[in-house]
Image (tube, rainbow, N blue to C red):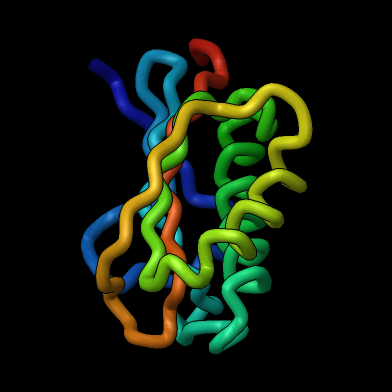
Length: 130
């Protein structure tokens, strides 16, 4: 199946061998997205809400670069480092998905950098291209 890498303008070099998104057969798979700046430094240290907003804004950029909108998101995989952040994550999440919500799950785990409090991976159906 043909695949297209989705790399929004201004994207920094990833920490590992991956791309921000892959589009295949109209389905966009957005890699796990952490609250990183272009140099892979954690932003908004200690602020789960601000980190979540940064992560979802980054994901939104990948979705839009693939020709979609956040309304096309069908699944989110959410990873947090402390259940104390769950409420802040949900508050910001609701801003990005104000109407019908996509499916999702949330687990507690460690992340690749200790100051990162949230990571989200996304699936969106943006339609077949070509």
